[in-house]
Length: 600
Image 1 (cartoon, helix red, strand yellow):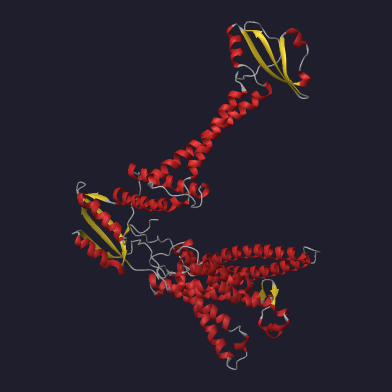
Image 2: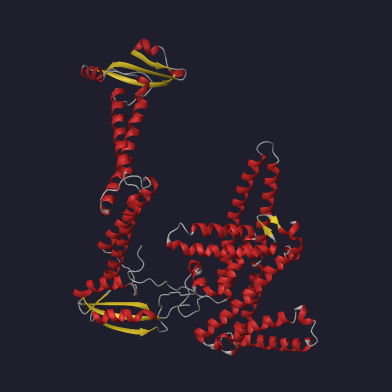
């Protein structure tokens, strides 16, 4: 159900506005009407950057920090963020510098240890040392006779040598001298050792920020979000009037909570006006459903919030969602696993996640019941168990399951049309819903006269004549009442188009429900294959039992994972595409988020 909303417009003196907003934020009732953001202020940008840095720090601590093993120091969140940020920046710089020294060391390594002072003295006297590296086959022994050349290191592939030459003397060698620094390896090793110590010290300080600091940072993010929200309302969504002396703020509040806001405004002597929703308004959407149906609200929000003036489809698709999910899983044993796993995890997770696990529990229970339709339990065919042969006729075979999927699809399509008719009646009046009601009557009348049980009745002729009469009237209504405001020729043209789109659409939608049969059968067959593979591996000598368990667990884990993914995706598709389309869902609503209530 969509909660009725009331619009409030408030006028506040600019000097009292900050205090007024603080109280309004604590109240957490009013959904602020947002204005178009033309530019963001420095306050907003600053808080956004701080939130970004805080999130990075939380991610860093979760990735690198110790799990609550170290004593927590009394540090403010701002200080923690600053220190982690500095270490995050410093550590890569130190590692990069060390890598550059290691590369330099690798370059100097073939030359061995030499005196840097001696090289510098030779340079002062006009003698220059040139370092060369060449492939062994390219080294010319004549160079040793022509120049003062010393081979430093020689291998089968490479030759390293040095030539001492006067600075002005030309060097007739077809090689380019290495641009190598006259450093000793000892000096490089000292620098690398110093950097290693700095890196270890930085990592040690880094590790001090363990998971003990997470609660403080998460609370700090909530504070920053509240501050950001405050600045956005203060500087963007508020309107200045009367030479910037008066602030105008507008927003929406649920009708049931109106009195609390009314009292706050009267206490603060705030001038305000409240009014009901008009045709041009687009109020925020707040859904309120009973406990069972409320579990499916998060699923409905994945597609879109409904428009304020249409029905909330959550309670209408929820039972079908359970049925479709269970049929796609296709195995009652997998349903047991889901139910048990969700129940166990429910004792360990935070409160905000328990509702999602409650949904998994219900989906698991639905999978148990629908899995019994095909008579499969973790890949085992129940009809072949000796003790269950007496009830094997209760299990459906593949052709019966195929027909069941089509029947369920037909029921949901007709149900969707009923919802669409109710939606149109609510939004525009019953005259606009006549065409949709006519489609429902046409489909039901055609189905009725083709049911074998009804055909066998003695008074079937009366039923057939009545159904055909209803069909003719329904077709006329479809052709001429699809758009009550248009002229007769336009109505007829639109009616013909409506007939074409509906007939082709309904057949296409009906075929989409075959996926319920296909996924369920695929899951059952794969489970059976896993069991057979495990049995074959179990026959291996010595380690057969071990292989049996491994293949069984791993195979069913993979099959269950695939089944869960397919069941959830295809169930949502049948809901959001086939059902929503036939129900005439428009959506596009914006979720109700009260000022001060969406932080965290």
